[in-house]
Image 1 (spheres, rainbow, N blue to C red):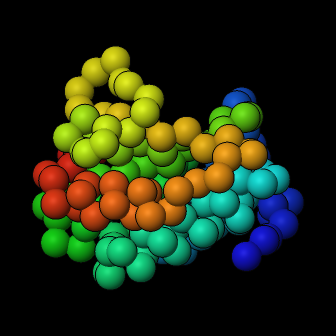
Image 2: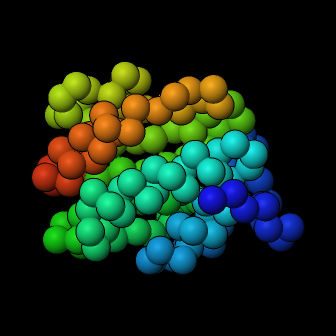
Image 3: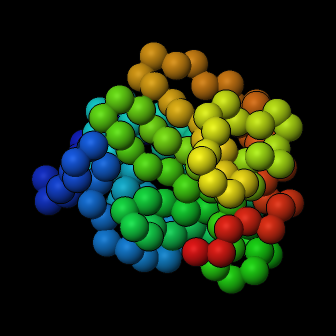
Length: 143
């Protein structure tokens, strides 16, 4: 699913789309459509994978980043966020240090661990789906 970036969307420094905050799938899909270049179809595929693995997943955009929560999670508790940079997509698993295996990019604080996706990366969707399934069983981050 490839979409052209809407003309009215501003890319912030680093290449992250500036999207109004909002709850639900619509603002997340607006963010995905606004992701520049290769990032939009890559994240569209992973967004669909998350929706498949977590029926009823709750979504929102806050601070120009999509957030994902299990449908039965405490209000405001999120397990994953996404942010665009010029050369990669940064996926934050908020309880990532508790996942097995731990996502490869360490955080300097808390339990967060990151997974970076670069243009030529072949994303192991089975491993990503496994992280998602593990992450929804954890308390998540209150944001």
